[in-house]
Image: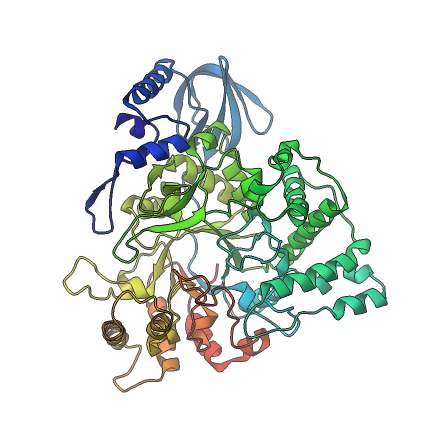
Length: 629
C-alpha cells in the first residue's frame, strides 16, 4: 500500500529462497502504528495519505541531509553554520567542497542537520589477528572472568607475534542488578562499558588505599571456576570497589554518563526494569541527578575508560563489537526511549526457525533518528570508537532494514522497516574516518547483495566464515576454494554462534544439540550430514595441499583449516583461541537459554598457558607470513 511505502514499511519481502512473501495487511497496520501512523480503517488510511501528500507539497527539506564529500544538493537559499564555527551563505545548493563534519543549515524557518562524510574509508592492509570472547580469556590474576588487564596483556603478546588485530566481543554495560545478563549481545547500554571487566587492583584508588583496605579487597577475589558466574564476579568486584570508593577521584561527567549513572543508582532501588518504576522516574528529564551512589557509578565508568585505553598496543588494532540493540528495560531503553520503537528486532520465519525469531531488542525509529539529526546513532558509534581502533557492526543489514515485531506479537507477525541506508552508512564512515578505525560488517546469512556491495565499495570489510563457503547455485553446493573468497572481508573458521573447529571435526555440535533436544532433523540424518561436510572439507584441504593423503589428527586438521585462510585474498584473517586449543564447545548455542551454558565457558587454558601452547605456536607461525595492520 502507498501509505506503508511512504513510511518505509514493507508489505512483502523475499525469503531465504528468494520467493515472495506477502505481509498480512493487519500486520502492516500494526507496524505503522508503531510509527504513529493510523492505518486501522480505510478512512484513517486516506487521512494519513492526505497528510503525506500535504507534507510533500510544502517542499520542505528533510530534517537531516547526509552527503558524501564532493557531492552537492539543491536546498534553496540559507545560511550554513559549519562545525568549525564558520558560516557560509548558501545560494541554491550546498557547495561540493564542504568540510567533513556535522553542520547546521538554516533555510527559512527550518534548521536542518547536514552531515558531510568521506566517499570511502582507506583500504585496510592485509593482516592477521585474533577474535576473543574476553570473559573466557582468564589469567591467574583474573577474578572469575577475563578482564581489561587480560586484554592488555593479550594484545601486547599478539603484537609481539606479528598480529595486527584483536577483535573483542561487545564490552557493553549490562544491567547491574542481579541476575546479571550473561549475553554481551543483550546489554543495558551500548554507550557504556561493563564494569565486570575491571581489574580492581589496577585502579588508582587501590594504589592510594591503605594496606588494611587493600588486604580486605584482596580477600574478596572471585575464584576462576569451570563456568563463569557473572553474579559472583559482580558481587565480589562491587564489594571491593565500594571499599575503595573513599579513595576515589571522580572527574565531572558528560551529561550522557550522568544519565547512565543515575539509571544504575535508581535500578538498585527500584529494580532493573525502568518501565515498572514510579511514573515520576520513568524519563531522565524528570529525575534529579545527584547523590553519592550516582557518583559511584560515574567513577566505575571512568575506571573502565582508563583501563580500556591501556588495553591498546601500537601496531595492533583493537576492534570492538557493536551489538544490534539493547535490552528495552535497561539504561539505553530509558535514556533513548524517545527514539526507540515499542517493538522488537527479529527475523522472519525460515526453514530453520519456522516461527521466526524475536531477539527482544527495540529498534531505532527511522523518523525520530532523522528528526534528531541522527545524533543518538552517532553517539553510540562514538562511544564504541572512543577506545577502539575499529568497530564490528553486528547484523550490518540492520542499517538497511530490520524485522520489527510489535510488542505482544509473535515474530511471524512482523515485517521489515527500512532505514535511510545512505545516511546510516555515511555517518558510520564519518565517525570511523575521524577515529582512524576499520569497519567490519557482519553480513552472514540471508543478506541482500546491495549490503555487501555497499560495504566493499566503501572499504568496509564483510565477513567470510569457512563453514559457509559453498556455491549455493551449483549442483551439490560444492565448497568454494579460498582463492575465490572475497578480498574485502574478514575471514575466520567459525564465529561465537557456530561450532568450533574441534567441535565440528568430532561431531560435538550434533551430539550436544541431540542431548538438549534442539536438532532440526533426526539424529542419524544430522550425523550423516555432519560426516559428509567433514569429508568435503578434508577433500578441500587435500586439494589445497594443506593435508596429506593419510589420516590426520584433529589438531593437524585444525592447523590445515587455518591454511585455508592464508590461501585466501581476504584482507584480515582471524584466529579463535577456542579453535586452536582443542575446545569442542561453542561459546553460544543459538535457540537456547538455560539448556546450554551460553557465554559462560572459559577457555581450557589460562592466558599464560595459551601463549606457550605448541598448537598456538604452530598456527601463529602459519599466519606470520601475512602482513600486519
